[in-house]
Length: 264
Image (cartoon, rainbow, N blue to C red; front, side, top):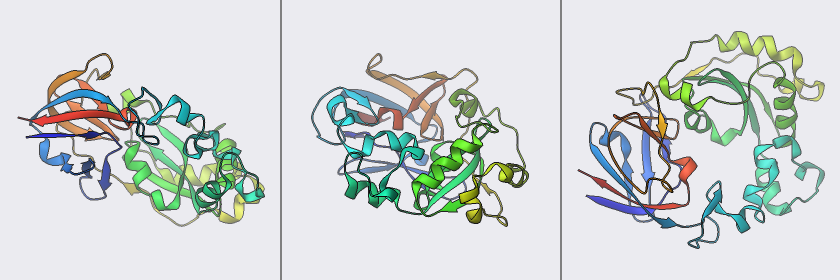
């Protein structure tokens, strides 16, 4: 059976283990059902997630011209402390920025390769943690806008990591941490204007991923360099497919690529 479409990040369902769905325009696949099956991935072309043109993807699923123009790829996406909608100041599109920035946001701790701090909209919990491959996570503060979340993350970066080591995450070389203890330890570094939003009485969330075999030396599949690949699917973690031959494929990192996916 063969499916064809443009890649976007896998949809997830919080269960034990996490259920993953690859969604195309006219089809969707429950990827958990493909574990231990042989899958062929064939690169066909590009489709920018904004303009839909067959132009090389630059970043985040967008072609270069769209990336530097549309609000979905503005700097405040990756650096929430740059948000200005709460001041009624436009970056690229104030209406869009208000819709996203002026929503409840969470600052959290997640343990994927190590304990890290991050920011997400409240509506994206626990999806954000799943996408990062975190096996445990906890909320620290819940604030009314993205800016407050951003300045909190910046303040905490001096005391805890803000990046995930994808290789360590995929190899499952992780140590369980007491995230409640981490949360309480970091409280003293939260900016004064955010302290009222501190969450004092919550528990960490534990996440189980559908993985039969972790790679010892993960090697990343790049469709531009390897347009045809075949392998036995052994697991899914974060937004990565893990194959028996140690190959890993980052679905989210390949958004905007058009592929044919065949199942033996």
